[in-house]
Length: 153
Image 1 (cartoon, one colour):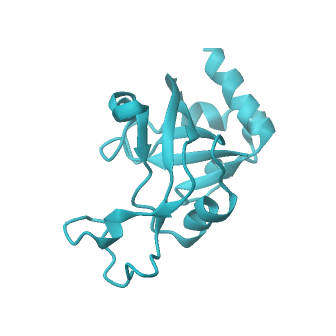
Image 2: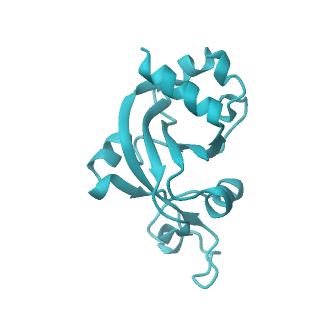
């Protein structure tokens, strides 16, 4: 299975992933039940990840990564200094999870605007109006179409 995972560059950019130890980061801060459930119930080690920069001047896909761990409790939910702190999440029954994500390759930026012009991506969840999920599934056809767009400038 493949996924698109959104990150604000000010939070964790593709360059942060490049510079991280073993080019791997924990995907912390997910506070949406559906996105959490994707990590818990559907993601597997080795799944492909489109690393997507969001909430920035030019949103788009900035790299290719892979899921590098099974889901485990997101430590930020227990840290009162974290913006992701959740006082209602007990350590005995954590509410929020994360997975580790490992870089496969940094790519040129594939802007959202260019993705919208590709007929093969018309049904892609990230392109749907009102889509706010930080993690969305990507079909095999969409994955191949994105890779083709990245290879052709």
